[in-house]
Amino acid sequence: MSDYSAAYAAWQADPGAFWMQAAQGIDWDTAPSHAFAPKAGVYGRWFPDAVGNTCYNAIDRHVAAGRGNQAAIIYASSMRRLTWPRASLRPA
Image 1 (tube, rainbow, N blue to C red):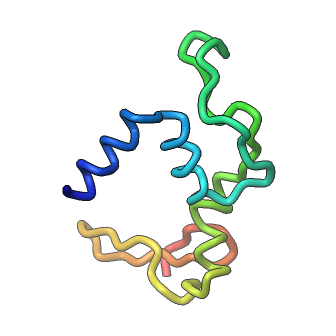
Image 2 (cartoon, one colour):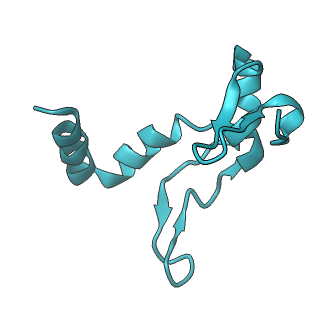
Image 3 (spheres, rainbow, N blue to C red):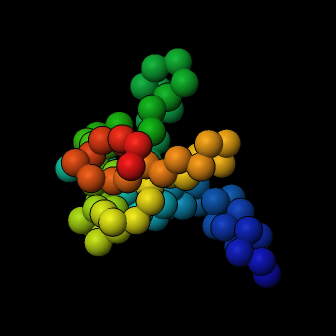
């Protein structure tokens, strides 16, 4: 079974458990106790009781993991490199 097939089967078998496992890949200030609240608003709400920091997850944790000296983004069109330092994306 391919990785995709296995992931799809796991999601079909138990969507809540599948997304709670996926949530373990995120650094939370307050971890979620459940994946989805279908009655919270028109479209429901994912991880409704969780608190996270998007900037930390997108940038800072990579610096903390030792990747601060690596290029964060390379623009293919202009070949400019942006770096991780100080949680800001500035041209290097």
